[in-house]
Image (cartoon, rainbow, N blue to C red; front, side, top):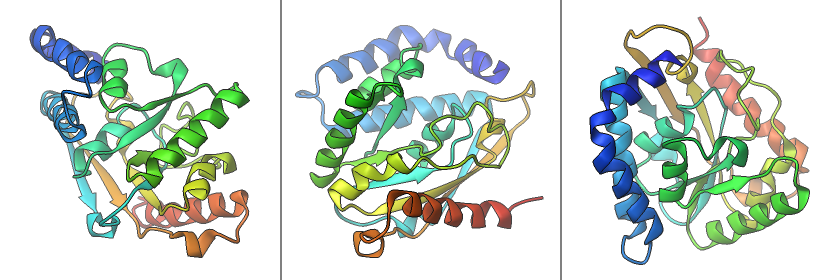
Length: 238
């Protein structure tokens, strides 16, 4: 958490320019393309990484589908997770986030800029709406990050909690590729009290196409995706 505060302080002189710019582009998607808004998001992340001494290495980018929409399902370790993926993901993507955590300073600006989705965890009707909206947009070619663990409160390690089966309903509705994403040491960025250089890893695994999972139940899909990510975590376990 100290690193997060440090990054904010080190970039506070940029805030009068960068925050209004993020809000302006978010409020006027008719004037700024998705590519332009994504480029701004990546620029802000790069500034945060430089001041926070954060380095992120990407592996398996060649596994990402070349065309069409898809949903990335990463393990969840902390506030940096989505930023690390966005930083290493060339094409524009967006994110589904817990609404309760989505309105803090800069987080709100990022979600709005990327036209992300705010999920109310305890509101079944609203969750169904989000599932349908994501499925519709993925069908139209958008790419999303969706964290199937649902939270990271107990994930300040390279271990996972069980994936929630309902997280995969959007992919099923869209008959879209599921891309497992393994995050390693991402929790170290904003966890603890060190200001030393941090190196995180983003591993894009081979996509699971609809033909492979269409006959599986949601809990079986969740287990499959989690198992593939676990193999990467085990390979890098100390």
